[in-house]
Image 1 (cartoon, helix red, strand yellow):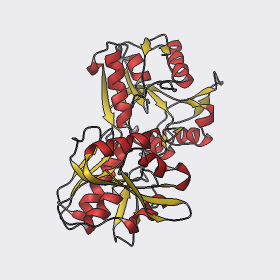
Image 2 (cartoon, rainbow, N blue to C red; image 1 turned 90 degrees about the vertical axis):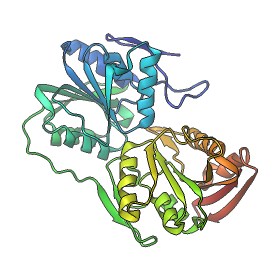
Image 3 (cartoon, one colour; image 1 turned 135 degrees about the vertical axis):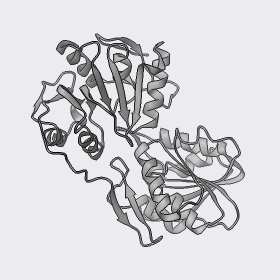
Image 4 (cartoon, rainbow, N blue to C red; image 1 turned 90 degrees about the horizontal axis):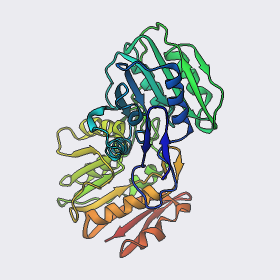
Length: 374
């Protein structure tokens, strides 16, 4: 296992969720560049440091004990990674305070370290929230690998923080150094909203929600084929996003008991607000989680899922496969997992390895809706 070695710490780090023979590291050259630069510039012992979008805690864990560190991001798996890596390296779990991206970290901060996220809307919302949270002479430093660092990231830093200087590239990583200047309080363009005809609901979407401006085409293919039940079914919307599948199902199944789970805090926040708008005070569980990892075995009758095929910039079906395994464990015998997926991903064959029956419910030229029976 590669060691993350910087002037601040020497750490053994793991990703979340853990995989056997994990092919990827929990850190990269941009993390290394950021910490080396910070060490060269000097970090006072009592400095308040805000770390944004630290994938699995590499930055925050490295700085634990060197400064007062607040870590904020939108990934629950990232938070679990931070906790696991603090424990793995014998650092106290309270050495870093964590604030989900659905809340605002309270400054003033002397240093802000930003890993540029895949979704620039998330970066924009985070920069907007920094207004009034920076100490005098604060430093704001963003970092990314060159292949994942669009010019627009620098434009956002300039718009909301101040003039930006780009560093030289080192190991295919670059830093963006922003000098804070006085600016009028910005108005956030988030959350966004769009309306559906069937069901007739309006959906609110916080900055990091997938397909923020309109319903994604996979869900659009799934919605007309959602099952309806009159009995008291126990149902989970796994990877719920803004909650659309769970809400649409609940509207057609008035006795059902719903659980909506996502690893994005902003998705959970959006789903909570959308549920209240569509279904009022109808009881529901909506939570940030590592899929159905915390769901008791044999406790669900139905799982609905539009699985992701990437984690941050990493593309693959390992998250979907894990969700299918979690769904199987959580379902009762005879329970059903309903999913939508791109045809080319071959989910039909994967589900057959886990479930006793798999049927195609519907298909479009691009997507298939599948039902798997435990």
